Image (cartoon, rainbow, N blue to C red; front, side):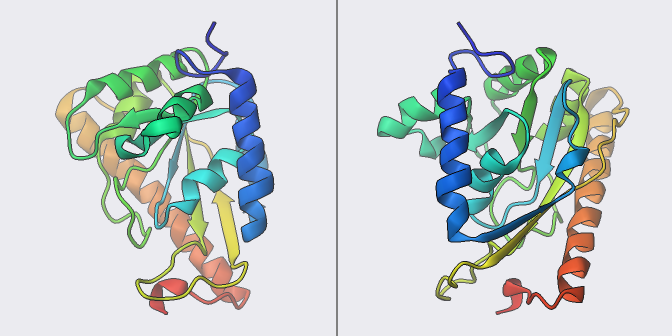
Length: 222
């Protein structure tokens, strides 16, 4: 029996266990502060859109967001034991650079059941400035009639060749939920994608400004 608000085949207890690992084992490696967690809707279909600059964000957000969330995760990670464990956690494998509706439809089913889905619309790790978005997030919002919650993370980025800092300060900022009206067809998706991108880019900028005001250095420029 599938756990409520999770993809088919997921286990509620394993999902809860995995969130505990992310929260209580991964989190101590960083000094994490979450801003605005109270903004997350307690129920109903939600698409979390988040920026992506390291492998750490998916783990932190999985544990720190105050709702069960099925994340779209690159298929390459679904190997061996992890290949069994991730689906039980409720994570959805997605092929990067390929047109594959199966993971999107699995995510839409989660939304139709009133659950939450997490996606990194930049498609790959980078500076996390939300400069480029793929259309998957807008598709999910439209197909699942979902509320959008942008989530910005800073402090996880490690420049190439740099040593990992001891317990770096990481800030996670949850933005205001909104429900965009995304039009039909490719044009509607493209316009909706840009609206989502701007919302996340503005939140990332707001978090950058907050960190600057509080004397936190920008590791993207180390």
